[in-house]
Structure formats: C-alpha cells, structure tokens
Image 1: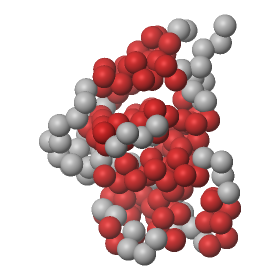
Image 2 (image 1 turned 135 degrees about the vertical axis):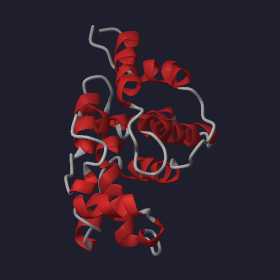
Image 3 (image 1 turned 45 degrees about the horizontal axis):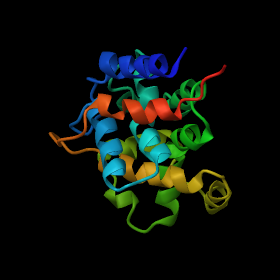
Image 4 (image 1 turned 45 degrees about the vertical axis):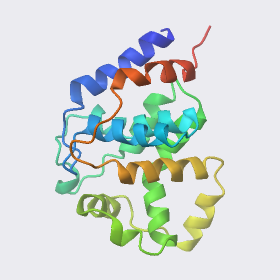
Length: 185
C-alpha cells in the first residue's frame, strides 16, 4: 500500500464513522479536526499535529455504540488506535496516541486543578481508565521517551470540544500524514 492509499484508508474511517458523538457536543471528526487545528496553528511539530488528529481513531474502530463509556465499558481506544497506526507510522506518532489516556491520568495526579477542569464525560472515562496515577506511576510515566509529546497531544485533546468551531478540513492534513507514513519497499 502506498502513502496515498494509507491516508485514504484512514480518512475513510473518519468519513464512515466520524459523525458519531464524541460526548462533548461535537462529533468524533470535529474533535479530531479541532485538536489538529490547534496543534497546527500553534506551530507544533508535524508528528504532534498528526497524533492530535489521529489520537482517538480507536473510538471509530468498534461497533459498540456511541455511549459505550456511559455504559461502563473502556474500549481501550488508545491502544486499539495505536496498534492500527503502528503499521504505517513511527513511534513519534504512535506512542503519543497510545499514551494520551494515561496522560490524563498523569495530569490529574500532578497538576492542581486539572481534574476539576475535566468535563463530566472525561471524568467518567478517567474512572474507567484507572483514575489518577499514583506518584510512582507518574514518575515511571515521565521516563517514557514520548512523555512530552503525549502530554502535548493531551492538551490539544482537552481543548478540542467546541461546538461549531471552524477548522481546517480533513483533506488539508493529507500531505502532512502522507509525509509521515512509513512504507515498506
């Protein structure tokens, strides 16, 4: 599969299932585009922009319904998404995707006021994901090579919940993603 085909396959997932509710008065696609737009406008590294766009793709890979967290089920979307993306992207994108839920757990443990700023949906998913990290877990998390990138993706994730926010269109991210795809010869 070439770079164009890889990105087309990813975009097809967003087109087919991105209309699902994210639970924050935006759709999954709107959330992804907002996160990537924030990262792009801030001049973040291309890998952070890509990870911000793709971080929740795991939510779109199941048919369990839109209210799965409200029913007390953690789909481990961060791992599912990272596993899919690892076929095409390197760890600079895959690991922040894999780590973005743990980044919320981390920030709840070490940053005053972070938990109180979470929406009800984020608090519900936090409980399913294990709650705030212990200090020992937080120190171990900080030692990961992609720790800072994962925290940055989490920051964009926290902001991408604005109803009717204008964003860049999905296709505008095609050249960026294609440039980051690792294809085998």
